[in-house]
Length: 51
Image (cartoon, rainbow, N blue to C red; front, side, top):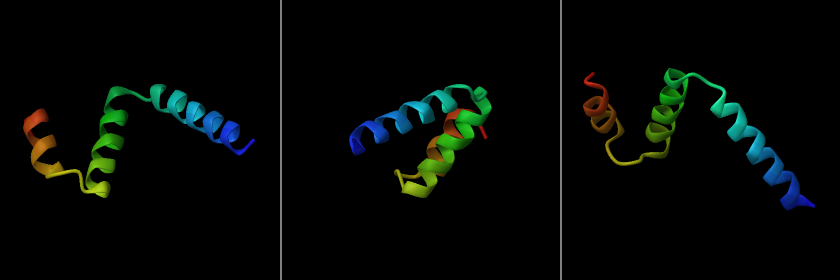
């Protein structure tokens, strides 16, 4: 049963994320990159957006 609840929660979170605007999704993705230390997030995102 625990796996079913986790799957349901994951699906609902993905649906919620999909309902956000492109700008909101980009902000969340950038924040997660910084938080999780995925490479040099500032450099990577700055190059992609021209910031």
